[in-house]
Image 1 (cartoon, rainbow, N blue to C red):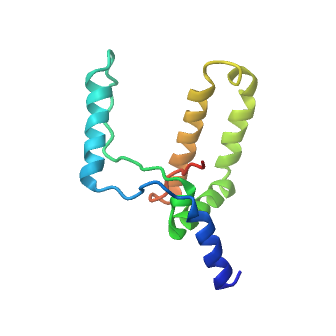
Image 2: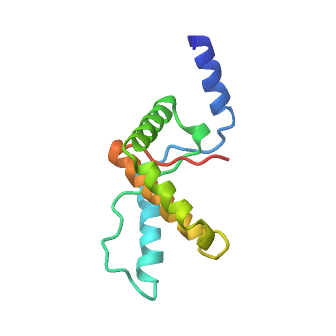
Length: 133
């Protein structure tokens, strides 16, 4: 691709971005504090784990910078190369019939996506799993 085509592609991808994606540390701290108050102190059963110290911000793919998209793509390629994607796909396929027709559908997919995101972060700690709308 030439520079003009790259630029046009960048404009096309980010054209639909209407979300704010840059948050101050103060804003992230407020969210983290609220989450911890809500789910760590108000829960009937408090998990015996240390509360999260880092808050990951998932962005709309269209709102990611070119550098963020490239880092994500590089991490995904590496996850494919090291066999993690095959392992996660095997888990998904192996339990498809038992999960897809039950109330476990959404929680099970959240677990798989969380595992994928952790593997992506092993490749590049700056990468989070984006979403598409």
